[in-house]
Length: 126
Image (tube, rainbow, N blue to C red; front, top):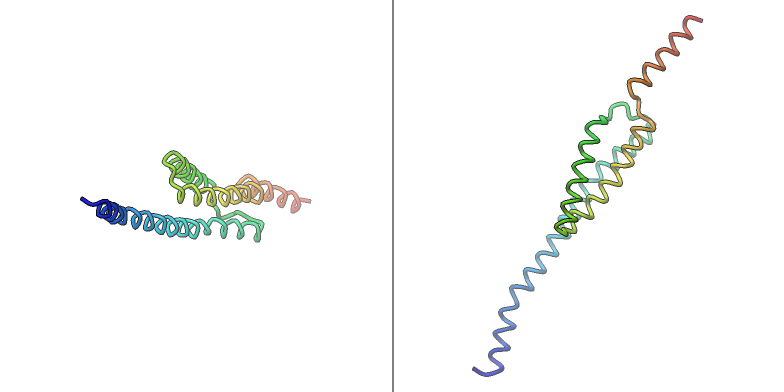
């Protein structure tokens, strides 16, 4: 076998590997973009809470479950070194922290509603 033939065969055999790498990076960018797009809903919820200065209809338990889910997916992405999971879940966790802050800061919890009702009752008695 000539030296030129072996070099040619080696280059041909490497071509599918490079095409697979290119497809992987394309898939990585697409999944990252879709993950970021999906987590924008969290930021829309945070914007609504801050704009209305009320988190009356936002479920704290549902938000905590979603937060725990994001933490699990982020941990999995870190352990397997999957960049789209890491990037998108950092983005989502930041947004979820803003939502949780809004729930605790502006939240109309039942206790605050009862306090307002008691104040209103006292005003009416006077």
